[in-house]
Image (cartoon, rainbow, N blue to C red; front, side, top):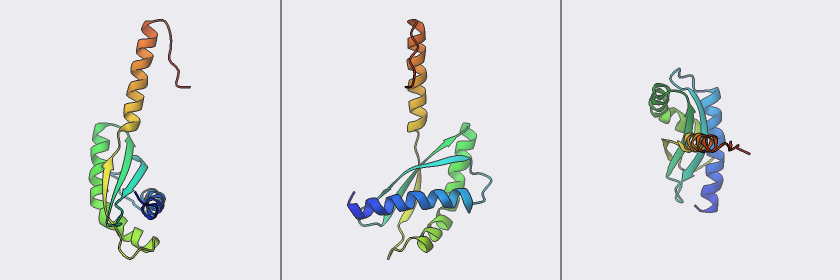
Length: 121
């Protein structure tokens, strides 16, 4: 990613997080964290990565709510970020946090079987 695209991605990450937490009043959205943003070098498309804490049903509801809200969020981004063209946005679930927790649980289980406990420090 070029430097300009990286800067825009950082701004988008902050702004999208603010919009979701303070202005998007959709009851379908659960406890969500914006984990990253990737923008193409031509600034036409943006993938917004998010993670959710909750059950599978809550994750599905949040994904549907984000899909419904893409236009609204894009409109607000256009008002806040000065660009000639506001990128088309897509939300992508990021399960890397869950994967890390799963790996830690496996390591703890293995360590417990050997009499050692693996800590996360």
